[in-house]
Image 1 (cartoon, one colour):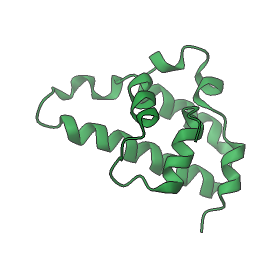
Image 2: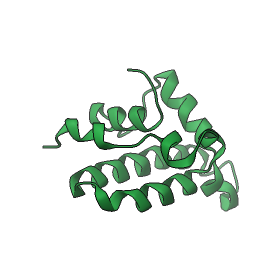
Image 3: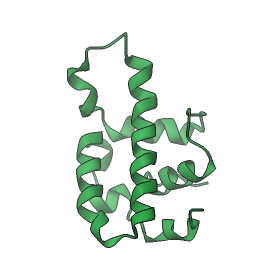
Length: 109
């Protein structure tokens, strides 16, 4: 069982990537998270990593047959911020993953 209090240890994407974080790519966010994660409890890293991969996968699947794959890793974080902020249901993102993602993307719950 994941201890949700660990989420409070997470930096937000603006803390990891700076004030223009919404213009950064998903790939840049993954690299920044990986660089910071050495100081986190393993369970927290695992949950954050799985949450980010699930978020990206839901986006990727929706474009699988409609867009060329060259730009998939370059999707801006602002897109995901807007998606999360809309409250839209995202496949395989339950309450814990949503809480983690909302924290990272600075979405008020």
